[in-house]
Amino acid sequence: MLLAAPREAALQQVQLWQGEVLEVRGERLDYLQVWDPARERGGYVKATQVRRSALTPAEAPGLLAVLRFLREAPGAESLGIGIAAAYLQAAPAESVRGAEGAEALDALGTLAERLARRASEGTPAGQQSQLALSAHLEVAARYGVKFASYEQDGRMRICYDGDAFRRVLALPATPPQQARAALALTQPECMDPALQPLQRHQLSAWRAEVLERVDTAGLPAHVRHRVALRRAAVWSTLAYEHARLGDGESSAAAERALGELASVHKGELSEEDQAAYNDAAIRVNASRWAAVPATAAAPAATRPTIVTQAGQPGETCVLLVDARHDAAHPLAKRCTYALVWPQSASVNREGTAVALAVQPMEAWRELWLFRLQVRQWTIDVLPPASLQPGSGYAEFAGWVPGGQQVLVAREARAEGRYRRSYEVVSVASLATQRQAGEPGALGPFQRWQDAAWKRSSVALR
Image (cartoon, rainbow, N blue to C red; front, side, top):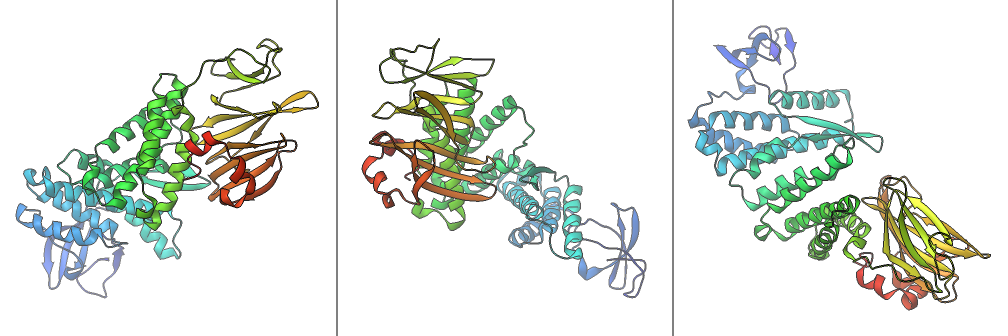
């Protein structure tokens, strides 16, 4: 508290918060006479309530020691940011450019990110707690720490801009420091949703480059797996974006995503990383068809075949043809702005149904089902979930002989809910007749699951 006079009963002028800077101009008994540059006001504070520093090189080691303690003290983020700023001003240039500077910047970034996470978790209970959180954000901003806010699922997400972490990657940082910096800089939750497609692709390429700088060989297993999961998610996004651009690099990106996910051992994941593992698997599986080479269209045969044509600019038209119905007179036709994976097409033994993977978004893949009903072909869409799109896939897993049923695997996280299921779906009505959380619990999945799906899908991880 900034007091008007050097005594406890003096008028309280303004509330001071952790991390604020005051200029000392004198002493009175056990009080300091100070100037508050942020509010342009003078007053007195108890000497025992502040830490004095002349910001000389000799004080730098002590400031770094305090910073190490505050880094692990939840709720003291603004104070830690102030101490980090003091250290960076007091320390010699050679120290700031070396290992100690990397440690201080790593701590600064960690504190700023934790403060942003606190602000994103929701309004704290109590007027005083709300006031303190707002004040801590304001104090951090005075040190040049910048935050951005984005709306997600009807809530505001506060994100640290990551400047300290960028500087860590430019210094001789240790592998754990590199990993923390890279993971913080590549959070998918902190990507600006207003970015245009080309800007998003450029940002995705930069995120992949940042993650490549991490020396994973020197990391503990659980941290190494966190980096691998983030790499898998980023490369799956790049696979989708390269496919949209048509630059021929989507296959390599998808293979890299599958390889990173395969390098993760579930038994070595911490409990808090299980959700990240599922999210990465969903994203990788959504784009996995990019890793499968597209085959040249075969001559139309008796059995129906999928072919694609360009439609309006950016549009792909999907046509179902056979020996008697060419592209000019197809059995069925539907155009879409989504990515169509023709190599995923599968026809049932009876020739009365065709399954096709179509990906409208980077982490959302649908199953298109072509069905012959009363001599007329129809096209229906099975989404990953009947919720607002988030991340997920619905994919063909096999045909049940008789032409009446299809096996479908679904996994999605949408509107804050996660679900994975294996289903036996009626071809006639598209109703789910049986479902389970594990494929082994369903007899049709044990007997009729498609061999290619079992071999390549991430759904069976």
